Image (tube, rainbow over all chains, first blue to last red; front, side):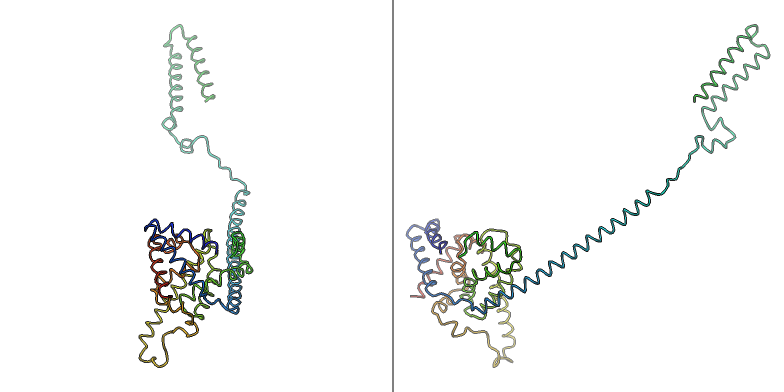
Length: 174
Length: 176
């Protein structure tokens, strides 16, 4: 009863927080007296049969608890296994998809619509420019043939050829 | 009383589901808990049942014990069990009142047995009001501090002290 004697000492101090010293002393005395009364008339203890019965009840309760814990663990294991199976199935599917030969999609450089179109100039700006330049060269050639450039005709032809070669090489360069 | 380290070891064992450790707890606390129930009910057979219920509940609840005063925790469960018993007794009383006419000759309310009322203290304690009686018995058998008791009852320590003092004074007068 070490704790009790320690508490007895606290009683006076505790009561002094609420009542005066004399009253606190009286209260502490009342407590001591009451505890002595209770100690002098001990309550009966439980029969040995009762404690033995309690111990066996505890053993059964522990068995139940273990069984429940086992069931819980088993359920958890089943759940985890199910998750693993699903994950494995998914990853196998993914791997199968990845191992299939890749289909190469070829795209034409020139759009089909332009390729098949009759009106090239309206379909592509570069082609339109080129067409215009060709038309211009054609006109200049015609002018030369008709003698519109006078005596400088030969140099003009050379100049035209040079220009033509330049355009041609620009075209193939892209 | 078990030393603090021993008690810690026993409780750890109980948490792991060790039957031997529970058995040790029964040995340490059964007498005090039985005294608590007996002084509150005045009947041995009821105290037997309540004590069994307490320790079976302990098996269920030991995992929720997170340290602190074990006695405080244990007697809080004991107090709850006692209050459940009181409620069921009230229900029983009501049932009896309803069936009184038909069962008057056969069924009577539970009465304290003469053997159980043998000691004077039990008789005098029964004269105290229920709340004061419970406070005094809890203080004596649980050996909790006033502060712990006040916390357990969710009331200011001054209220607990005042009720207890009135109770022990009255008990002294009755026992003189």
